Length: 459
Image 1 (cartoon, helix red, strand yellow):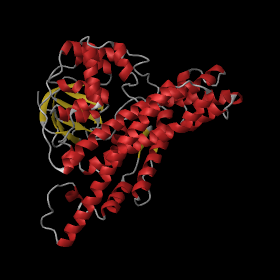
Image 2 (spheres, helix red, strand yellow):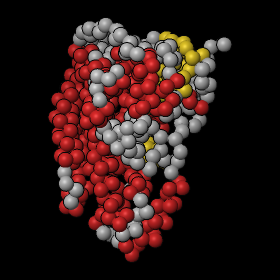
Image 3 (cartoon, rainbow, N blue to C red):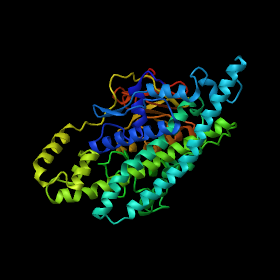
């Protein structure tokens, strides 16, 4: 990955959670919980200080990658032998002393990744249990205060699990881009099967919502209703599934040998499970925030429940505990109005080349570009299209089996959409900022998932 472009890398790091600048509640939660998650990773691994610091700039979450580079050196002893650490073969041509350093670095590195794998499963189970308790709880004032204290810690746990897997996979990126878990073992694949069952009448919509109703197209935009609140956004996908018929056949699985290959598959699965778990945490946060807003609406501090998403986390705590009482009603509503006017609209990152990105699934494909911005656009998708997506969110993965290629404006190579592209052997390039502003819908476009290149063939 390109460490010389920290803003690009940082936007990709967060793109599975927020595809564009979002209101203050989500931004502040991810900023504070993200810094807490990084502090936890740095302390657990005894890495060199300082740790990275997440900041908000022009509505985007950003961080400096320099501490990550220093951390790699401290973990392995040197960055000179990093390419050998990810290989199964012996480092030919090195002195006996250097061979020993590679062996020691590899052992420490692989031990770190296995620790991520073991701890991640336990963390995921604990977060899912917490989410279930939050959904089933009676929302008393006392319970609101309890959840208020837990929200940041739970978000930080999920982020630490997600980013630890990302970090390990980034070091193994050369091999990870060509390996994928079985798609139907992943939540994105299960979501795809479940929606197809609704489309063909095997499942009822109510049954689907019992399992997947906590989701939304952009789950950490906390102002966005979950599907169980408003299932309307699902209708275009269901219409597309009915028109296109059965899911395309899944290519045969390729067996992967070697300890490193098995670890890559496991880390990718863990990474996608962590992302799914964070979606449940976001659902709990939205539920908590709307419950906390009721008193503010009743006494006029808030004009509507959705105003709560314009508050930062600490401000919402002050509203709930009474520090922001009714004597400050006019001040609070004035602040909310200024923020309502200032919330940026969705859009890609500026000043980036739209002709190259990060390879995420190998192979080459050419086809008509299908520019997608909202789920309503999916009814225009036809087999053989090259999908141009705003993010690698799991919801966009629902369209991939019919595509000939995939280009993602902002996303990581290990995200749900990229993993599903690898599983269906469909070329995919991610992190191509500005691509949706330059592509003409229907124009032929070529994608090379092995090199990350995007080009525009002559008509």
